[in-house]
Image (cartoon, rainbow, N blue to C red; front, side):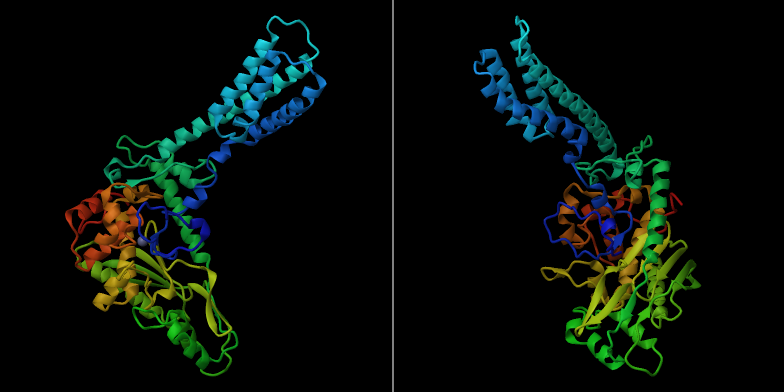
Length: 490
Ligand SMILES: [Zn+2]
């Protein structure tokens, strides 16, 4: 559940006044993409069409105000009222084109003044100027009408988008502010602005779209191929560097670059300096029966750590089963390299692109990065780890890979038991009291959004953590997995 692709960055806008967890966190795919959606805002509505008409009027009116004063020495009271109305708009509404009401009122003010000027007047040598002024004012008013209609359409889409399953409305909400909706170009908008069913739940069509997006995102996540560039170091130098005090995990005392162990262990016995190495798409597929759960793993045949990482997933499933949960068949993708590591100037530098540390993709796919092994996230709020997976690994002595995978299994079972609710939590933030205290009651990461809360509470329960009634009520309202529950959706 860790994400890194900028375009998949998402739901970081909680209202909770606690530090946001680190960027690369444990996350369910599908919560993503607020950044993508949350572009623009009202600015978008001061559309080209409005701008163009307005610029024309500003240019004309400015010139007219400047030159007509000189040209026509005597200005009647009525003409001065036209001047005044033009000035009012030039120094008022024209500076805030997004304020449609103000612009409309001030432009109509110009027209009113013109009507008054014309009343009882014969032909005037100023007629042509005035006619052109009115023409340009009308053009802006027409553009404002179009923008207003567009806003109304967007507001209607926003009202649909911010709907949520009534059972979850006490805890989760989806904010429509500042989003320009594009249901034909944006799959999330398409799904989340679709008409809901009679119970206020996502329509079957919306669920289908969100599942398609998840499948596409899994494909994109697996496109990433990491590697190691030892920068000319010998294997001994690299070994020393990866275990130097600056590269040690504060919780486990192990290296923060566990994939370098896999790299070093897979080198041929002789030869220095160490060569560059890339991961491969050539994966080895294995099917395991884990207490009746079919687990299919995809690993790199050259990864000496593959067995250990598969074992971490098996242990995670076993622990979840031991709490009475049915775990349906699933797949785990465990590539050898989840990052690009390059040694430069005596430092190991991870490249900017990487896979998330761990991630669940509906319907039944887990992806775990090689950076997980003995290397949990150690960010703290006060003296508490922000991630339950870190705290529980430290307390229990289990590998943090296992605790992280149990968090992911929480997402999986959440989806499996309540697919509609899981998907309806896409791009949601907290509302109500539980989110405000989740950082104390569960973990900082649980406070990030309702979907992460469910996975964190699930993980805590597997390790025997006790939660108060409020937390459990929210967990169940949000569709948190229950032991032995027959799936409602497949
Ligand atoms: Zn998560």
